[in-house]
Image (cartoon, rainbow, N blue to C red):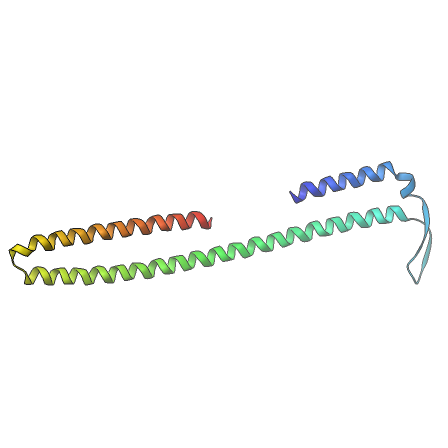
Length: 150
């Protein structure tokens, strides 16, 4: 977009220069304070100065945009690293919880009679279903975050 605006302004400036060539080339006296020049085409000097300033600000805006993109990319990398770290911490917590539940279920199975084994099996199946559901939700959340970060 900036390039199109720059080209449009340069074309308009060029058209202005072509239409007003006589006025731009009219000789003037130019004083810089310590030296005086006679017969300088002041309009042409101002036209060249305007063009140079336009190009300077165009490149300055491009550099600013590149810096903003670099900052955004660095922030996204940091967020991805944080997400990975949090995922690994959550995974270890779920693994600890699963180990704890497995030990409790094994203790229940070892201490229970045949009447309670059905209940323990149902409880074990329910815990496995909940674990699969949590893992599915975490995977969906991970996919959603990856899509939003890109």
